[in-house]
Amino acid sequence: MTKTLLLLPGDGIGPEVTEQSRRIAQAIADGGAIDLRIDSGDFGGMAFDRHGTPLPDDVLVRALAADAVLMGAVGGPQWKGCGYDVRPEAGLLRLRAGMNAYANLRPAYCFAPLASASTLKSEHVAGLDVLFVRELTGGVYFGAPRGIEALDDGQRRGINTHVYTSAEIRRVAEIAFQIARTRRNQVCSVEKGNVMEAGLLWREEVSALHAEKYADVELSHMLADNCAMQLVKNPRQFDVILTDNLFGDILSDTAAMLTGSIGMLPSAAIGDPGAPGLYEPIHGSAPDIAGRGVANPCASILSLAMAFRHSLGAPAIADRIDAAVASALDAGVRTADLGGDATTAGMGDAVLAALALPVADRVEA
Ligand code: IPM
Ligand code: MG
Image 1 (cartoon, rainbow, N blue to C red):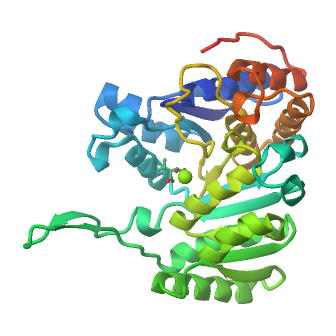
Image 2: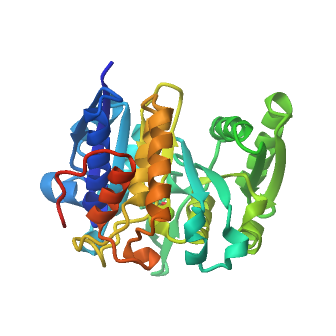
């Protein structure tokens, strides 16, 4: 059966890095390992410029009809003046919500040859393998009321609402517990239940679900501020970190630096079984280096691997891609973020070569 991969390259370095994933996916499909159709669509600021919206309706329809969606990056300084509802970031939030991709898996994995590239001492990060399970379609990112209102005394008031239901907490916690069973079997649930009722509810629901169905998994709880500290003090104490949308956003960026570069971190956003997954590198659009062909495509390529694993039914291909990235790094190929001089396309070439696939149709940005 033909599987469909929809590419949404977006803005900034998004198109450059996604192009390397496209080459790899195409070469794998050409090799006959999978029957794959690769499509692409407009998304983010470039879609706003072309269509007046960062997420055109037909793109959401195509995303829902695909098996997996691989996004590049969205946003840039040219759209900072746009209203919140049409900003590129709003398109991303609508895509996540529209696809009901509520569980964001963000592995922070330190490839052995990159341990010395971290700003932390290598003895703290060598062998690091943490998985964030970030709630992605709720919390303060989506809660109502929200907005900026004028007060009678001439001041203004900004409002966002941090809100979670028990069902929203439980469905993402289920995924964290299930994945933990395939890893080191530990979940650390992170919130601020000492000051936030929604955090207290989070802790209670995770504990209740654990007692009901996942008592074999080792569960601990940690306050988010302490987690931030522990991540830079002793990051290898963690296996799976389960947390809400906002804390997950912040803490996963912290963890990214432990791995050497944010240019290395992939992510998968999944929902109910059978629904298409949304795959994205966790780095942003990096407008400062966009269009120069120097961005690290590894986060996109590793996101593609996650798509093969979680949505395209091809875990063996995912393993091959992961191994090819590791072997390109072992061979010393590095983009500038890791202190090397490989171009974006050069890194793509190295991964294709490690996959023993033809290195063709190369375009320098
Ligand atoms: C991320 C990004 C997004 C987020 C932005 C671009 C909306 O920072 O995926 O981590 O905050 O979720
Ligand atoms: Mg972020």
